[in-house]
Length: 226
Image (cartoon, rainbow, N blue to C red):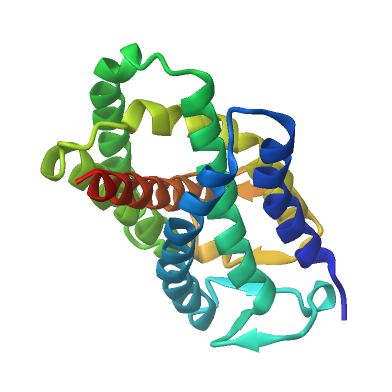
């Protein structure tokens, strides 16, 4: 039994509490508001993770795990999905309180269109790669839906800002997971493009996960106001 993966989870879970203790820009009310969207996002992406695990698209090194599994996934990965969503949403909320100016929102659609084009390019050129296809398909669907279907909620600039900051804990966590290695990827299921030994697809898969939790958060917030 090893607690290496669990340490990554604890690091992520500590982020909202560090923000809570160190600044007035993140309050206890914010912590209460973000747990449910984070839990729902974790449930959704645990389904995708279960599929990946069953297809051996990614595998976990038992040497670094506690040894508790559910549906082919270690317990630590379920915690990771929740903790990652919670950390990302806490950073999103903190930045919104700290920097209230939203003038750059008008440029977010152009950035989203570039992202949609990038998704289409990867889906076209790497259509035989399972991880690539799923990661970019999910991201494309989310961005297209938010920008062109449910367009009344305008938060994409704030999302992109939070994503840029969230890349810091992303590299800490996945650098640890991929280089130890706790998490291994099937080479044939990815493009083979790695950054610091982290598959390129991870950056966009994480973006999709963060976008889903931010969207749920904003949706719940609007419904509360109504």
